Amino acid sequence: MQQRQSLGDHFPSLVIVSGLLAWGCFQVGPLSVGSELQWLPAVLYCVTALMGLRIVIHCLTFIARFFEWTSAHQATGKDGTASWATEKDLKKEFSKKLMGPFWGRMATGGKSPIFSDYASNALTVAPAGSGKGIYSVITNGLSIKQSKVFSDFKGELVCILKKPLEKRGEKVRVLNPGGLWQSIIGESDCYNPLDIIVDDLERPGGLRDVPDDLREQSAQILPEPAQSDGENTYWREGSRRCMGIAMIIETMIEGRDATLSSVALLIEDREALEHNLRWVVGIDLEGNPLPDGPMPIESCAWAQIHDAADLAEFIQWVRAQARGLLSLMGNGESRTFDSFISGAQQALAPFAFGRLAPAMRCSTFSMNDLKSKDTPTSLFIVADASRMEAYKSYIGLIQWCAMTAIKRHENKSVRVYFIMDEATNYKIHGLENLLTWGRSYGLLLHIIFQDISAFEKTYGKTAVETLLSETEIKQFLPGQRSPKTLEMISQLLGSQSVMSAGLSPSENGLQENTSEAGRPLMTPAEVRQTKHGLLFIRQSQPALIEPISYGEVHPWRKQAGINPFHGKPFLKKVKLRLS
Image (tube, rainbow, N blue to C red; front, side):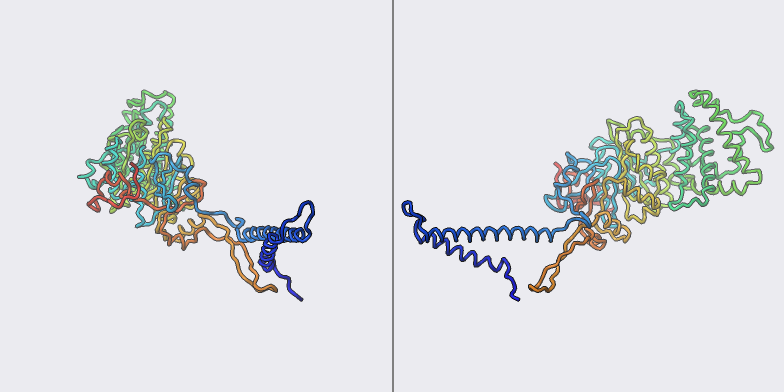
């Protein structure tokens, strides 16, 4: 059977014939002479018009088939619509001024710098050696012109940032128990965590907050394990109870001179602890009333400012707590008490004696300074990386104190940024809840760590889910290598629909076959190999970014102090000019 020729086979001959006919129309003479129609030109003109019409029909058919072919080779998106964001896509997310949180610059297009603020939380995942300090921590310290709290594990951040922050009018407070780089930083400030309890005692109506604050602070000092299944909760609660009663005894007696060191020493001395408990209750070793009566709590200076009913209930609560511990100490429950007290002693051990104790004496500043409208304050919590087992408790406790003060400050609109470097090396009690409602108090968290497995180990699986859902901006620096983190990034990037084509034999020769399938925007292997950073800003498509260090930004490169570990200014070729 004769095969039918395709349109493509007819079209060249049609064009040639039509061209010859058109040439012939110009050669046969006019269509009419006078009023008489010339039949030969008329026929030739009609045939030429029909051939032209046929060519037009062929062209329209070609166009229709072209669009049909294009449609067959274009993905519908049924298996995913992920794509890379352009500068135009993200323009609405950029800050209007070149200030605020800084994330690098676009890796494609005009390579615009990315300054984008967040109302609640941000996340940076940066493995060791990826340069999170120079690309994220220090750059944000210089770009954010509001109050900030830094966790500084080697003292290098404060050495680099102290001078430029003070020069632009910020107050800089440094808690440096280990005395690192003292010739550069100067004398350390002090902050006493028990000020929170003393503030309750000295604030009208604050007595009803004392039990809750004691529980909160005790839970920060002795937190639940990340993967706790409820086992041994009873014993930890008992240890926290011992800490709480020791704290309230010390603060009632010593006021602002009470310290965690004195609390730790009181718990270590069982005889002194029992003596104070009996004084609070008002009984001697035989259980008889003391000649001078119980501790005169109602005669304390702070007691006069409180409502009489509140004071009476508070005194009753304190004595009930003391009586309960006394009963455990002497009524056949000494083993239970020993377990309680042992847990409390272990938790308070870092604060009993050593470098941390002097840094937690009478406070040299107030955490409320962070909420000042007029003068931003930057607080650096400096740790000694060679003694992290002790310092991680200190960093977590001071950060918790700062967050507590911010949550309770009356001015909720003033923002305070927490740049939480190495956030998996310490634990903040209630962090998962803070991620969801901290923004209501102007408390903004930038959580920085090396890989997602470390965060899960510290805070638990549910906290990871909360972290990913409650962070508006997610930054992943190049060099990712944790399998779990790589897989997570690939899933966050999403999938795109792609078309694949193949040839197969048919009656008319080779026939093209197309199919649509989904593939990740980047596979875990591609994420591991990329030299670009990845940035997610709210609901926008992900962006490929180029990290920019503070040494590549004018004028930051000249403003920043010298990193004492390097001993010379960090200057690289300028990639970004802000002025």
